[in-house]
Length: 170
Image (cartoon, rainbow, N blue to C red; front, side, top):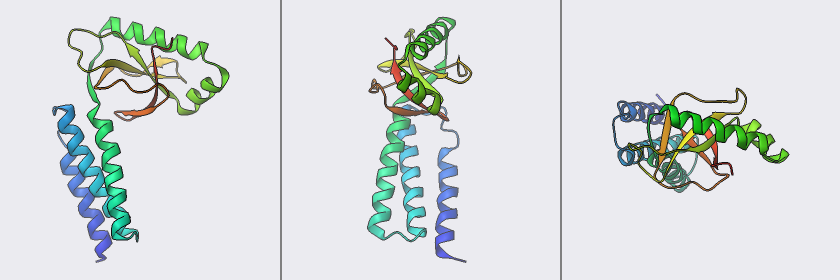
């Protein structure tokens, strides 16, 4: 069997084992685990695809850093009715009042992350929810507490959604 294929399959297996039952881990633990697993997998795949050792290491480190930060900054919990109302209203106004170039960018990306009110169980710098610009509704009932306030216009990963951060939309 090809050594590259063995490495790829092993990496996938290890990644699958690492990612199971991560839901109850702290954001920091999730970040370390997710970043390490993604970096090892990406580096292994790059090497199997023919990248030199130094290129594979660079690809693995960069991927691990990005994946680790994305997972590290997010903690999640169920939204209260108040949080959902605030997020829905802020996102709707942000989308409606956006200049044409921003609105086109939001539509293309589909999801925006908007601030919502913080509740007593909130942690981190901000509480955000995800808004779908196509259905014009908040996605699900999850609030994501981020450790650091993202820069407006940056795209971050929230579970399976890549969303552009728009803040309060004001």
